[in-house]
Length: 337
Image (cartoon, rainbow, N blue to C red):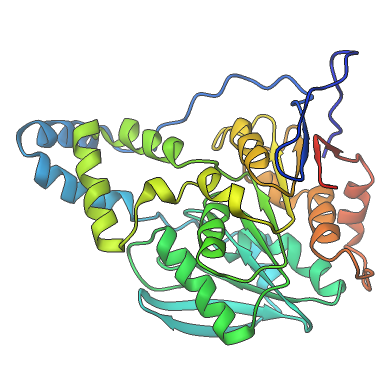
């Protein structure tokens, strides 16, 4: 993780929202253009044609595509990080969820992002166990080795509720990207969390929606039908579930780590969420992107120190991770009191 320097000699402007103090972004960030969801050309053209002649049918097809995550393969290094875990399984209303437990102590939930899996969060396991915590990481519904074909914010949040029922209230939730949005929804519904750490979180769902529409060839009219049907089926209003809408009522300490050049979730969304959340701390990185940030030693160390502030590390990171951690220290652009 590289430190972020203020390019100007003037003092950054600060917000006094809630109990937080937020500084302006201390690094020039590239213009963000959402990358459309990759989809075959024929599918895109077919969806455009279907939307023009049968928007209702197009919305049904689009719904199946929108809520169907592609399962990412598990890399050997990710598999190795999960190898020593004790398997647990839970039955949720959406199907069977497979998870892994490591260590003892107060539970910490690791929540991956859309299209991800438990292995993406593997770098946090060893240092959290070394801090005396019990790590619980699961493949969300329709992800990894869990069952199901469709998933959503509500599927993720229901799984966190089931984990709480089985293992107790978490000391902390560490969540990535879409998983951070789902964790915010779960917390708003009553999930008791002492503190949270979000990596590359969205502030709204608009980027997800625009990437899908542009990539798959879904018109705004068809997409609005999709949204209305999904809200009816899930029993929610998405307008009430945007993280930045929920944030002002949250009081848990929150750490946000976001890369300045993230190509999936604009760093501006991390800043917006930090501004809206009364007790937030924003940390910027450079050159780590959307996924590499999860295995960056400095990011891992900062997150672990945040979620376990009163615990001493009993076991150091591996030699490779420790050496990487010495390369650079992150700068905070926002600090909680």
